[in-house]
Length: 158
Image (cartoon, rainbow, N blue to C red; front, side, top):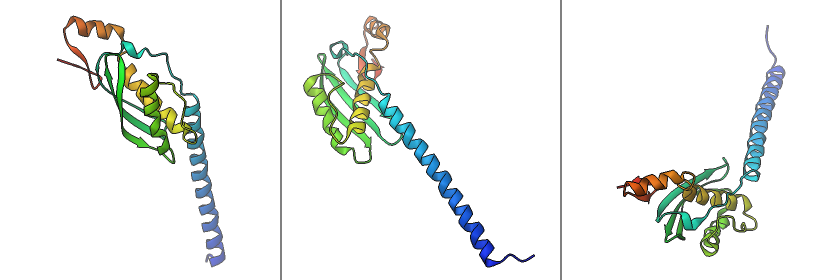
């Protein structure tokens, strides 16, 4: 049984169409998950004055946007935020949000217009950096009782 060239081309076209359709569906699902993750991102009530002096690293990832930051806290004040890594589409203008956080001394500042998702991811990375130790107040008490410094990149240091 000999297949005609026309049948082979038809079969190939249908197969390619199905492959493209599957990849499109997977991509659209990823985009929907990303948008949902950004929309569902919330910020807790964090008292920065309670954060011990130190340098903390935090990150946040919603697949299409990722940020890793280094936050410096001195005397209960955020003095510096370095963006170590920021994977974004067109969201690089959002990087000025760290200046707003330092200026206002709070995490949930206004997002940068046109870069809302990246702004949200950067803010959450900052919150994750400084709230790692906030979540466990007994961790502070234990560290103080041991006479150790807290804040060496989110770890206990001797």
